[in-house]
Every structure is written in structure tokens, then in C-alpha cells.
Image (cartoon, rainbow, N blue to C red; front, side, top):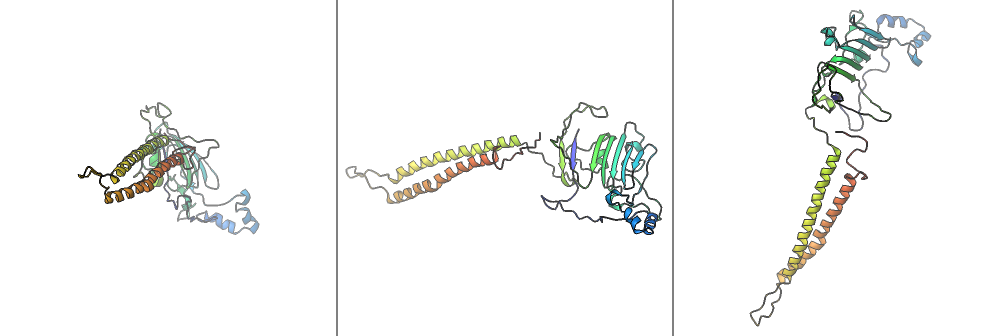
Length: 328
């Protein structure tokens, strides 16, 4: 089993998606011309009753569906459909139902057949009969016992690939929300065999594909492993800070010895005066080490500790892992 979550819309920003609605809120464009003429001849009261307000009847463009003898079609006057039949993505010859395959039962739930291009009649004024359109229909839930679900919805293969001749469920609309009052799980590979009786020999995962473009699809990060790896890296940096501190103190002692170093004079072995250049430079270097380098090392250790607490600890304000969502 595999799951693909894909979008093909362009986002305006990472917080808000802004889309332009080209369709008017109330439009009778494409509706049956005879019905429009008939309504135009009615009284204002009759017209008001046909505007659909408060759930009253509403006359609008609804195409006729080009069904097959095997399909049981349920519909209403407002372009909502449930079709019980065999696998079909377009014309009567499409899908496994069109090929005459058995075990390819399907349920096609559609709201808004033809989407924004809806019309009830053609250019000649005759009733317009249409096939399913997985591209144009406004909203759809498609369930099939045997289908090429990715092909029908024109989805990128991703890492899990495109399924063929398997049972599938496809959901498509401008916006989709899945809400769980308590929790939601996306789970793959629950059974040993698929719906066609074939052995499931490998575990396939979940692809999240924005823009239906899998050209830069990358692996998800496992949070706990990431925390462990970064924590180990921080510990190494902390140890390195200690090594530098030890080296600094050794250098400090050496500089102190050099700055006060003297030689024995050839005159009765009397000690000479320390070098003025070494003494001056040594003192300045030791002060710099204490004021700058030592302080910087201390600050570095404090910053590393704060970094671990803030980003790598569950109690941290910017903990890098989600406290609610998990992935394997």
C-alpha cells in the first residue's frame, strides 16, 4: 500500500493561499435556454421562488451524463452525482470497465460536473451529454476495485510510483481537509496481500508532493535521530572547547615563563634582566588571553548549553521536533 498526497496549485505565501474566483456567485450561464425563457416570463414572486434561497429549488446549468447500461446513476437538479458502476475515468471505453474486466466495481461521487465550464446544451441548443472528467469536474471522490488511480488523476510518480490494476481511492477538489476529532493516521502495508491477491513484498511509504512535481523529492527527517545526532555534535564541540581551553592555559603558563625569563651573566653568573620586548609582549598577550580568548571560550560553552536546552530538549521553547506528529 502506498499513499500520495499531492497538490497542483500555486501558493501565494506560506501562511495564506490567495486564489482569484473567476466564477460569479450566481450564474445561469450555460443553463437550459428554454428554462431561462420560461422563468423570464414568470411573476417576481415565482422568480424569487426559483432562486434557491432558504433551500428552495434552483434552476442552473446541469449537463446530462453519458452513462453506460451497467451504471446506476443518482443525481439531482444541482449537478450532484453518485454513479455506481465499473471502473471508468472518461468515455465508455475507458478504464477496466471499458475493457470488460471483472472485479472492477466503482463508486464515483461528483459535485459540479464540468466545473467552471458547465453547460446544459451545446452550440446547436441540444442537450449536452458528458463523460466523467477527472480534470474538469469540480469535486470528486472516486473508489474503484481495480484502477490506475495515479493515471486517472495525472499524478507524479514520486518515490512510491504509480499504481496499476489495483484498488484505489482518489479525492480531488480545490481544497481538501481531513479532520479527526482525536487523531489521524496515515498507515501503509497493513496486509500481506493486495486486493488482487498479489503478495506485498516491500514496505512503501508516503509521498507529500506540492505542485505535483516530484523532481526534487527528498526523504523526511526522523526527529529523534536528528536530535541525537545534533546533540552528539554539540558534545564534540563542547569537548573541543575544553581542549582549546587547556591549550590556552598551557600557553598562558609558557608566556608567563618567557616574559620573565633571564640568562646567567658571564660575570660571576649574575642573572641578567628579562628582555624588555618579551616582557612587554608577554604581558599584553596574557591579558588578551584572559580578557578575550578565555571569556570567549566560556561564552561558547554557555551558548552550546543554551542551544541544547532551547532546540534539542523537549522542554525547550524552540524544540526542533513536533510534540504531536510522528513519522517513521
